[in-house]
Structure formats: C-alpha cells, structure tokens
Length: 157
Image 1 (cartoon, rainbow, N blue to C red):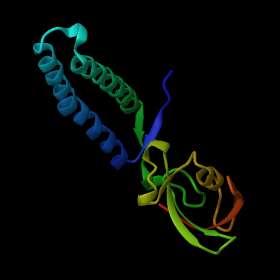
Image 2 (cartoon, one colour):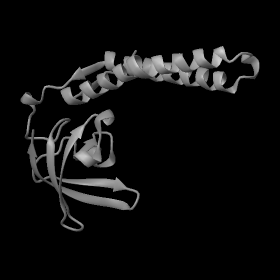
Image 3 (cartoon, rainbow, N blue to C red):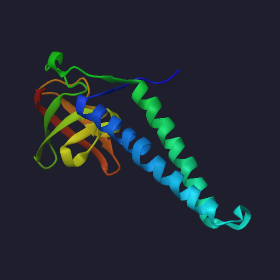
C-alpha cells in the first residue's frame, strides 16, 4: 500500500512540472542518444550505447517513482488550518531561548522542505518538536549539538 503525502498546491505543481520535464524533454533526448550510439555500429563494445541505456534506465526509475508520488499526493487546504496549534502548513514564529534569535518557518511535507524559502519538514527535528505546540509552549528539540529550546511566539496560516 502506498503512502499518501500531503502537499501545497505549489508543491504538487512543482512535482508535476518535474515529471512533465522528464517525460517530454529528457526521455526523447536519451532515446536520440541511444539511436545515435546504435548507428555507430558494434553494440558489444560501444560505451556510448551502454551509458545511454544506463541513463535511460535511471530516468525511467525516477519517472516511475515520481508518478507514484504524484498519484498518492493530496493537496492540503490551508483555509481551514487550526491556528491554535502548530500543524502541517502552519507558519510558526519561534524564539531560540539559547540566543534569543527569532525565526519563522512554515511546516511542510518532507518533499517540499526548502530552507531558503523558510519551509521545514514536519519530519525534521525542529518540525517534530513544533508539531502540536501552541503559542507560549516551549519545544525541546534534539540536535547533534544538544537540546535547543524554542518558544512558540505566533502561529498563522
């Protein structure tokens, strides 16, 4: 049984765009490489042909994996998010109690995590620590450097 993963509309569109790119651009390009290598003669000693066939196999594996992910993806509706607790798709403003630094992150599915966009996975140590917390709660987050305490300052959608 496949695992259902939840995405934002933006995250699911990104996956579908990547899948389209692989099928419409990369797959035909590899087919052309195979045809060109095949035209060069003896396939038993043709490294170009072997490399292209291997690339084709890897691409087809990636396509199959992405198709499975997309087929089991569900879009989360962020309009009904309960902002009394930190949940997936919540934007959570936190304060590191060790150095008083404030940060704001959106909690997302693992496949959508992107630190540059301030999106952290609910499966990350910080994400796990924040899930279910309310404003004013303190989350003890286990990191390689030890436990860090984060106070939840604000939750929004």
